[in-house]
Image (tube, rainbow, N blue to C red; front, side, top):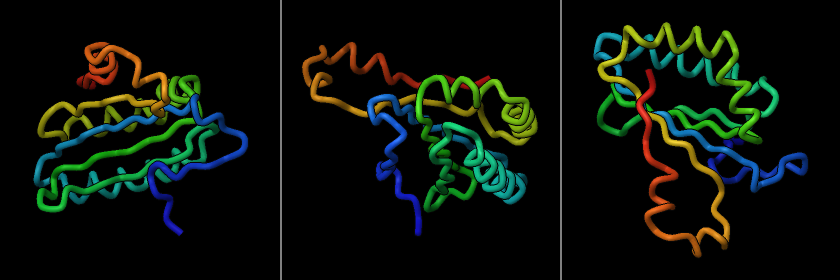
Length: 133
């Protein structure tokens, strides 16, 4: 059974603590198959990390060099642990020479009723994209 983004339901995870990271990647044409294979294997490994709830690789329907990685973590702390792991840093360094442009990353959290009360500009600034090194 497929894990559909947004359907995570675990009694040991507080929904308001979830952190969702979207990483957009464009690779060189000649690297497409190699990088896709690495992405799929790497995200499978991430699922064995404590606090990593989902790692889904998405492919653009018409551009075979354009990928998105959807990662869901139980908390901001779980994301920090993931980012500090040597395997994560090694993967990013292996990815670099195969990129057509720097990847971008946006970080999200579950919406709540209080979000409807926040000023519009503040809400927009919270989800601005950042370029990864």
